[in-house]
Image (cartoon, one colour):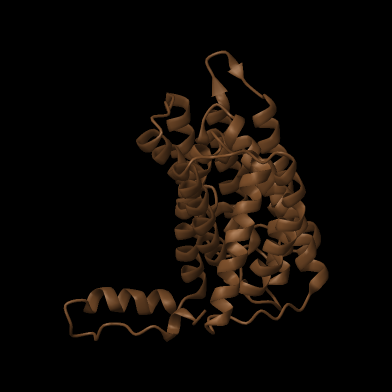
Length: 311
């Protein structure tokens, strides 16, 4: 994939001059560019969750997981074939662990999407993972969160708890438990991804991730394969395509931002998902969900205006 700096921008004197100047400023600041990639990736991940929710009406979690990794794998190979990226993995052990943790997290995430009370809740439970990411990054990568980032994560997590609250208390069924387990594994996966980005490109990391995830999910898919109509297959394949693009963006972004910063930006995903779920799936959104989502977005905006995480 060509680096963003290679793309031509409009001349300063053109009608798009101010926009071009803004784009040049973002390109010159790696941290801000990483933030743009992360926000775009979270938007696409939200759309993927909605497509998964629809497809899960006729397909099982193992089947959807296998489809996701198959589509992503084909996309990475095609991208590499046209010269967009080099598939030359370096740190195989880290990449294998990223694929193992990430593949299991995706499988449990799809179980959560299918069995939670709504799509937004499933996404929120999975995105408690920044708590674990920050902890694992501190222990294994020595990336100690700064005070501003640390408080941002605390406020974002408080928003998650608000969203989980129902009129009769907190509900934790099989779907919710799958979402929590997915979050722990996602935290490990993101930490290994951050470490691997020091030596490996986004395409190489995603390629190994797809192969490992496919090997993990195919036996489960075969055991629980279900017939589905063409419309459902369209949603499933669209889910795979959205996953490919969002995963590439996120993987590249983790080469530009620290693990705690990237984990914090991921908290925007449930906010986008609640909006999409209400708009396209007619899922009800409670007052506490709205309040929790607002708290999450506010925490991301506030914390992202601070400095980098402490070394």
